[in-house]
Length: 337
Ligand SMILES: [Zn+2]
Ligand SMILES: [Zn+2]
Ligand SMILES: [Zn+2]
Ligand SMILES: [Zn+2]
Ligand SMILES: [Zn+2]
Image 1 (cartoon, rainbow, N blue to C red):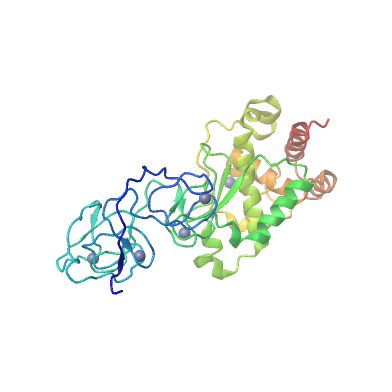
Image 2 (cartoon, helix red, strand yellow):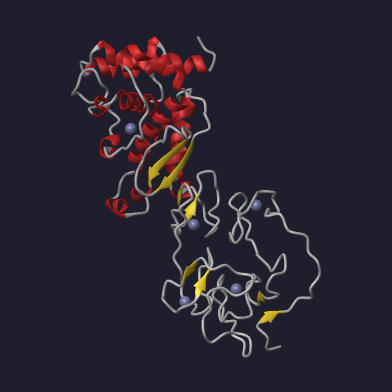
């Protein structure tokens, strides 16, 4: 057997639904199911080229010299074209090969079928990019459909996330369905997607992580961002007099960007700005709330301890009232009085 391709007999195949065995919807040529993580094999179904790679089993063309999916050498005398083509039957021309070999490639082929070299694709229509392979992923995905690793990045910060969950629990704050994802560029919460809490992955896997940011700082940062998420989720509260009186007018929501991560490692109330729990809290009512929320959670909702510290730091009554307002609201959500 010298053939590098498996020949199949032609018989009618119903148009397959693009679904994983687990039932989740798939996009064609995703190597992994983003829901259950199962590896996928995209065969010549429905039949279009009558050829599949001997190594990975994915659909190829007789004209190819290399498998565009696994990179295997599938050159066959008399079939493979010496001169690269734009798109043989069964494939689309989406772009030229990145390396200028003259051949065409179809999204999202990782290898050029003519010269075997790796291709870069922009996955523009995804929510963000994978911490592991940098390809596009959506916020709901547990598994990266490209590399099969954890798409949220949560597996890189298990200790911080465990602590945060524990702190929320002992603070009496019910899970509102928030989802922490590591993403490049910025930490923040988009008010349009209030449950998605993005944490700048650079603190964990990038340049800044080498400066050894303590995981407790990460806990503080996550708690601060969770404060934004919590408030966007309970947005009607911001229109109440009780809220407005202590935090002020939040006006219109804005995309919160946090560059002040350094201050998030402080567990102690700062002594500056007697009306606020930290200097950063004074920048905007939304930041004021997020900082109040962070202190409340990091200090386990222990009001007596918090209020005593505010007293020692000579904070004004309004600083106390912020914590009391949050405390009462949290308890009202649990149906406590
Ligand atoms: Zn699946
Ligand atoms: Zn292959
Ligand atoms: Zn090429
Ligand atoms: Zn990935
Ligand atoms: Zn913030």
